[in-house]
Image 1 (spheres, one colour):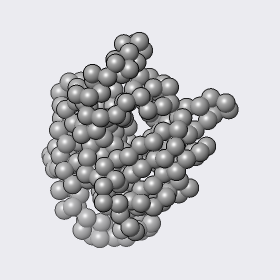
Image 2 (cartoon, helix red, strand yellow):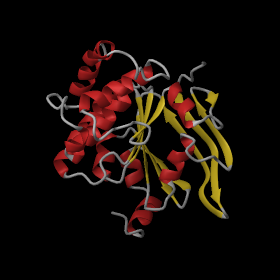
Image 3 (cartoon, one colour):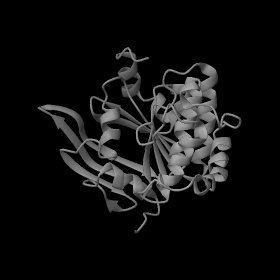
Image 4 (cartoon, helix red, strand yellow):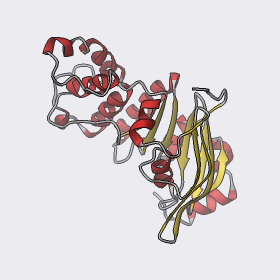
Length: 253
Protein backbone atom coordinates (compact mmCIF):
# COMPACT_ATOMS: atom_id res chain seq x y z
CA UNK A 1 0.00 0.00 0.00
CA UNK A 2 1.36 3.40 -0.95
CA UNK A 3 1.28 5.81 1.97
CA UNK A 4 0.82 9.54 1.68
CA UNK A 5 3.70 11.29 3.37
CA UNK A 6 1.55 13.98 4.93
CA UNK A 7 -2.12 12.98 5.09
CA UNK A 8 -3.30 9.61 6.34
CA UNK A 9 -7.05 10.16 5.78
CA UNK A 10 -8.79 12.37 3.26
CA UNK A 11 -12.45 12.99 2.39
CA UNK A 12 -13.24 14.68 -0.89
CA UNK A 13 -16.64 16.31 -1.44
CA UNK A 14 -18.20 13.86 1.02
CA UNK A 15 -22.00 14.06 0.91
CA UNK A 16 -24.84 12.10 2.49
CA UNK A 17 -28.53 12.74 1.83
CA UNK A 18 -31.37 10.95 3.64
CA UNK A 19 -34.62 11.21 1.67
CA UNK A 20 -33.96 14.80 0.69
CA UNK A 21 -32.27 15.88 3.94
CA UNK A 22 -28.57 16.54 3.43
CA UNK A 23 -26.79 15.51 6.65
CA UNK A 24 -23.26 15.98 5.26
CA UNK A 25 -22.77 18.37 2.38
CA UNK A 26 -19.62 18.51 0.23
CA UNK A 27 -17.20 18.03 3.14
CA UNK A 28 -13.49 18.13 2.39
CA UNK A 29 -11.33 16.86 5.23
CA UNK A 30 -7.62 16.10 5.48
CA UNK A 31 -6.13 14.47 8.58
CA UNK A 32 -2.38 14.87 8.90
CA UNK A 33 -0.44 11.78 9.91
CA UNK A 34 0.59 11.66 13.58
CA UNK A 35 -1.80 14.37 14.79
CA UNK A 36 -4.88 14.59 17.01
CA UNK A 37 -7.62 16.09 14.85
CA UNK A 38 -10.94 17.09 16.45
CA UNK A 39 -14.30 17.32 14.71
CA UNK A 40 -16.61 19.66 16.62
CA UNK A 41 -19.84 21.58 16.12
CA UNK A 42 -23.30 22.21 17.56
CA UNK A 43 -25.73 19.33 17.96
CA UNK A 44 -27.00 18.20 14.56
CA UNK A 45 -23.94 19.54 12.74
CA UNK A 46 -23.29 16.21 10.99
CA UNK A 47 -20.25 15.08 12.97
CA UNK A 48 -21.43 11.55 13.78
CA UNK A 49 -22.76 11.05 10.25
CA UNK A 50 -19.33 12.09 8.96
CA UNK A 51 -17.73 9.49 11.25
CA UNK A 52 -20.18 6.85 10.00
CA UNK A 53 -19.27 7.71 6.42
CA UNK A 54 -15.53 7.53 7.02
CA UNK A 55 -15.83 4.00 8.44
CA UNK A 56 -18.62 2.96 6.00
CA UNK A 57 -21.27 2.33 8.61
CA UNK A 58 -23.20 4.62 6.25
CA UNK A 59 -22.69 4.69 2.46
CA UNK A 60 -21.87 8.10 0.95
CA UNK A 61 -24.29 9.59 -1.55
CA UNK A 62 -21.34 11.27 -3.22
CA UNK A 63 -17.64 11.79 -2.69
CA UNK A 64 -14.43 9.88 -2.03
CA UNK A 65 -12.59 8.65 1.06
CA UNK A 66 -8.88 7.87 0.88
CA UNK A 67 -6.79 6.14 3.54
CA UNK A 68 -3.04 6.08 3.02
CA UNK A 69 -3.64 7.21 -0.54
CA UNK A 70 -5.99 4.32 -1.37
CA UNK A 71 -9.69 4.93 -2.00
CA UNK A 72 -11.78 3.05 0.57
CA UNK A 73 -15.19 4.58 -0.24
CA UNK A 74 -16.72 1.18 -1.01
CA UNK A 75 -14.85 -0.94 1.56
CA UNK A 76 -16.79 -2.71 4.31
CA UNK A 77 -16.31 -1.58 7.93
CA UNK A 78 -14.43 -4.80 8.72
CA UNK A 79 -12.07 -4.36 5.77
CA UNK A 80 -11.42 -0.76 6.78
CA UNK A 81 -10.62 -1.91 10.32
CA UNK A 82 -8.19 -4.53 8.99
CA UNK A 83 -6.33 -1.76 7.15
CA UNK A 84 -5.65 -0.10 10.51
CA UNK A 85 -8.44 2.50 10.65
CA UNK A 86 -10.40 1.54 13.75
CA UNK A 87 -13.38 3.25 15.30
CA UNK A 88 -13.30 2.96 19.05
CA UNK A 89 -16.45 2.37 21.11
CA UNK A 90 -18.17 0.77 18.10
CA UNK A 91 -15.72 -1.67 16.56
CA UNK A 92 -14.07 -2.50 19.87
CA UNK A 93 -16.00 -5.29 21.57
CA UNK A 94 -16.45 -5.14 25.33
CA UNK A 95 -18.25 -8.17 26.73
CA UNK A 96 -19.79 -7.32 30.13
CA UNK A 97 -19.69 -10.87 31.53
CA UNK A 98 -16.01 -11.36 30.68
CA UNK A 99 -13.09 -10.07 32.70
CA UNK A 100 -10.94 -7.14 31.68
CA UNK A 101 -8.16 -9.56 30.71
CA UNK A 102 -10.48 -11.72 28.61
CA UNK A 103 -11.84 -8.68 26.76
CA UNK A 104 -8.39 -7.42 25.78
CA UNK A 105 -7.27 -10.92 24.88
CA UNK A 106 -10.14 -11.18 22.39
CA UNK A 107 -8.76 -8.14 20.59
CA UNK A 108 -5.36 -9.80 20.42
CA UNK A 109 -6.95 -13.02 19.12
CA UNK A 110 -8.68 -11.02 16.39
CA UNK A 111 -5.34 -9.60 15.28
CA UNK A 112 -4.06 -13.17 14.73
CA UNK A 113 -6.68 -13.69 12.02
CA UNK A 114 -10.38 -14.42 11.58
CA UNK A 115 -10.58 -17.49 13.77
CA UNK A 116 -10.58 -15.85 17.23
CA UNK A 117 -8.89 -19.10 18.38
CA UNK A 118 -12.01 -20.05 20.36
CA UNK A 119 -11.29 -23.79 20.02
CA UNK A 120 -7.67 -23.52 21.08
CA UNK A 121 -6.38 -24.67 24.43
CA UNK A 122 -6.32 -22.46 27.49
CA UNK A 123 -2.54 -22.73 27.43
CA UNK A 124 -2.42 -21.22 23.94
CA UNK A 125 -4.68 -18.36 25.04
CA UNK A 126 -2.52 -17.73 28.10
CA UNK A 127 0.36 -17.01 25.74
CA UNK A 128 -1.47 -13.75 24.95
CA UNK A 129 -1.80 -12.74 28.60
CA UNK A 130 1.52 -10.92 28.79
CA UNK A 131 0.66 -8.58 25.91
CA UNK A 132 -2.89 -8.16 27.23
CA UNK A 133 -1.58 -7.14 30.66
CA UNK A 134 0.81 -4.70 29.00
CA UNK A 135 -2.14 -3.01 27.26
CA UNK A 136 -4.21 -3.08 30.44
CA UNK A 137 -1.41 -1.32 32.31
CA UNK A 138 -1.05 1.19 29.48
CA UNK A 139 -4.65 2.38 29.90
CA UNK A 140 -4.42 2.58 33.69
CA UNK A 141 -6.32 -0.60 34.49
CA UNK A 142 -3.51 -2.49 36.22
CA UNK A 143 -5.02 -4.46 39.11
CA UNK A 144 -8.41 -4.77 37.36
CA UNK A 145 -7.40 -7.72 35.14
CA UNK A 146 -9.77 -10.22 36.74
CA UNK A 147 -12.69 -7.87 37.37
CA UNK A 148 -15.78 -8.35 35.22
CA UNK A 149 -16.21 -5.59 32.65
CA UNK A 150 -19.74 -4.92 33.89
CA UNK A 151 -18.37 -4.08 37.36
CA UNK A 152 -16.06 -1.31 36.13
CA UNK A 153 -16.96 2.33 36.77
CA UNK A 154 -18.04 4.15 33.61
CA UNK A 155 -14.75 5.97 33.00
CA UNK A 156 -12.69 2.81 33.44
CA UNK A 157 -15.02 0.93 31.12
CA UNK A 158 -14.19 3.52 28.46
CA UNK A 159 -10.50 2.91 29.18
CA UNK A 160 -11.10 -0.82 28.62
CA UNK A 161 -12.75 -0.05 25.28
CA UNK A 162 -9.63 1.85 24.26
CA UNK A 163 -7.47 -1.10 25.37
CA UNK A 164 -9.48 -3.53 23.23
CA UNK A 165 -9.07 -1.16 20.29
CA UNK A 166 -5.33 -0.86 20.89
CA UNK A 167 -5.18 -4.67 20.87
CA UNK A 168 -6.04 -4.45 17.16
CA UNK A 169 -2.87 -2.35 16.70
CA UNK A 170 -4.58 0.45 14.76
CA UNK A 171 -2.59 2.96 12.76
CA UNK A 172 -5.42 5.47 13.19
CA UNK A 173 -8.17 5.64 15.82
CA UNK A 174 -11.53 7.37 15.45
CA UNK A 175 -12.95 8.27 18.87
CA UNK A 176 -16.64 9.18 19.04
CA UNK A 177 -17.18 11.44 22.08
CA UNK A 178 -14.69 9.61 24.31
CA UNK A 179 -15.45 11.71 27.43
CA UNK A 180 -19.24 11.93 27.09
CA UNK A 181 -21.10 11.59 30.40
CA UNK A 182 -17.96 11.43 32.53
CA UNK A 183 -17.24 13.19 35.83
CA UNK A 184 -14.28 15.56 35.83
CA UNK A 185 -11.79 13.03 37.28
CA UNK A 186 -12.57 10.51 34.55
CA UNK A 187 -12.39 13.20 31.85
CA UNK A 188 -8.86 14.07 32.97
CA UNK A 189 -7.86 10.39 33.03
CA UNK A 190 -9.23 9.64 29.54
CA UNK A 191 -7.73 12.84 28.12
CA UNK A 192 -4.32 11.83 29.41
CA UNK A 193 -4.84 8.35 27.95
CA UNK A 194 -5.75 9.75 24.51
CA UNK A 195 -2.62 11.90 24.55
CA UNK A 196 -0.55 8.85 25.48
CA UNK A 197 -1.93 6.51 22.80
CA UNK A 198 -1.62 9.25 20.16
CA UNK A 199 2.16 9.34 20.61
CA UNK A 200 2.67 6.83 17.80
CA UNK A 201 -0.61 6.94 15.85
CA UNK A 202 -3.17 9.33 14.41
CA UNK A 203 -6.41 10.20 16.21
CA UNK A 204 -9.59 11.75 14.82
CA UNK A 205 -12.20 12.46 17.47
CA UNK A 206 -15.66 13.91 17.83
CA UNK A 207 -15.80 15.68 21.19
CA UNK A 208 -18.22 18.11 22.86
CA UNK A 209 -15.96 19.05 25.77
CA UNK A 210 -14.13 22.09 24.43
CA UNK A 211 -11.56 22.08 27.22
CA UNK A 212 -10.57 18.56 26.11
CA UNK A 213 -10.46 19.73 22.49
CA UNK A 214 -8.29 22.73 23.42
CA UNK A 215 -5.89 20.57 25.43
CA UNK A 216 -5.46 17.70 22.97
CA UNK A 217 -6.04 18.85 19.42
CA UNK A 218 -3.47 19.87 16.84
CA UNK A 219 -6.16 20.69 14.27
CA UNK A 220 -9.88 21.34 14.72
CA UNK A 221 -12.56 21.15 12.03
CA UNK A 222 -15.80 22.89 12.95
CA UNK A 223 -19.02 21.70 11.30
CA UNK A 224 -22.43 23.33 11.10
CA UNK A 225 -25.51 22.07 9.25
CA UNK A 226 -23.48 19.35 7.55
CA UNK A 227 -20.79 21.65 6.20
CA UNK A 228 -17.29 22.68 7.26
CA UNK A 229 -17.51 26.08 8.93
CA UNK A 230 -13.88 26.63 9.93
CA UNK A 231 -10.61 24.81 10.45
CA UNK A 232 -7.35 25.48 12.25
CA UNK A 233 -5.79 25.26 15.69
CA UNK A 234 -7.84 26.09 18.80
CA UNK A 235 -6.70 29.72 18.97
CA UNK A 236 -7.79 30.25 15.36
CA UNK A 237 -11.21 28.59 15.44
CA UNK A 238 -12.16 29.88 18.90
CA UNK A 239 -11.79 33.45 17.62
CA UNK A 240 -13.61 32.86 14.34
CA UNK A 241 -16.77 35.01 14.24
CA UNK A 242 -18.78 32.31 12.42
CA UNK A 243 -17.80 29.69 15.00
CA UNK A 244 -18.72 31.97 17.90
CA UNK A 245 -22.10 32.68 16.31
CA UNK A 246 -22.75 28.97 15.66
CA UNK A 247 -22.10 28.02 19.29
CA UNK A 248 -23.77 30.96 20.98
CA UNK A 249 -26.80 30.61 18.78
CA UNK A 250 -27.15 26.85 19.16
CA UNK A 251 -27.61 26.36 22.85
CA UNK A 252 -24.93 23.69 22.62
CA UNK A 253 -23.64 22.28 25.88
